[in-house]
Amino acid sequence: MKKLFTNYLATFKGLSKEVWWLSLITLINRAGTMVIPFLSLYLKEGLNFSFSDVGLIMVFFGLGSVVGSKLGGYLTDKIGYYKVMQVSLFLTGILFVLLQYVTTLIGFCASIFVLMTVADTFRPAMFVALSLYSKPENKTRSVTLIRLAINLGFSAGPAMGGLIITTLGYQGLFWVDGVTCVLATILLINVLNPKKARVIDEVKNENPLSIYSDKLFWIFFVAMALFGVVFLQYFSTIPLYYRDVHHLSEFEIGLLLGANGLIIFLLEMPLVKALEDSKHTKIALMFGGGILVTLSFIVLNMTGWVGILLVGMFLMTIGEMVMFPFSNAYALERAKRGSQGEYMSWYSISFSIAHVFGHFSGMHLVDKIGFDNTWYIVFGLSLLSGLFLLLLLFKTKRLENSIGK
Image (cartoon, rainbow, N blue to C red; front, side, top):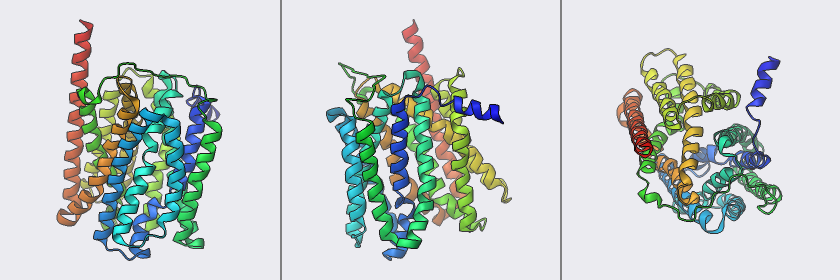
């Protein structure tokens, strides 16, 4: 057991202190955004909006994420990652506090759009900062550490959020969200000041290529957007499937979803380190991760045995642990061709687009054709994502062979 623990800690070695600070900032920020998991509940019970109203608000949530990701990439290239992260965190805190005073449908659609636009400018800037503070050989593990922070934040956030709602009501939730964003801003100013922080891999491309001429990136982009639509079903339709088909209680659903975060915390870093040391390319690893997520849906239609839910969750979690770190590392690697902020903003937008269409389309399909048929369609989308990754692999190898000649 001691050796196992020592080996686990060894997978974190070599990461810069700036990456650790960035992970702590991300942890505080993600734990603080505890309004998000309770947003639909607040809209339905607190403001008495209908299901269609909630669906419309979630569309504006996704649209704000798209605009914020694009704007964040543009501003990062223009004024630098540090200013973008600082302003985004601080203004997000203010907007979270103000959101509690919005009670109309039109007002909430507009407010959540503005909030997500401001909040998601942070993501491209954070990815660029992560790239600068990581050695080239450590970038994938640095991304994995950030993901661990995000997962811990999302695990702690809902637990704290439920306690706050019970004691202080929903208003307390908005105040705590706002304060934690401001605290993350203060920490950022004190530990990641560019004048003091140690930049490890600063990339200055004097003649950046336009992202719009990078055909390989756009194949990758489509694959990620399709994968995002599939993956997001675990945050919308899958919990309903657990409740309506297998009759799990909210507590049991929470335990099952919580297993995802626990597995990631225990296994992701060692798994990524082992895969990094293998001879497989990032694209091949992404394809493998996508296959596992694909299988996690199709097994649900194979039997009515409740234990299959654990099998599906395990397959999805392992697939997620492979797909996200290596897709992120691929985007960072590709970004060296052009403007880093622009590349990382489009990488973020691929998942923002999935947020716009994924939740709504999944709910609509379940309502019209039922869960089993929906899983077959999701299975098809996942296969399509895999085909784009195979196309990317084929074209990349052909390009490498032509350069080699």
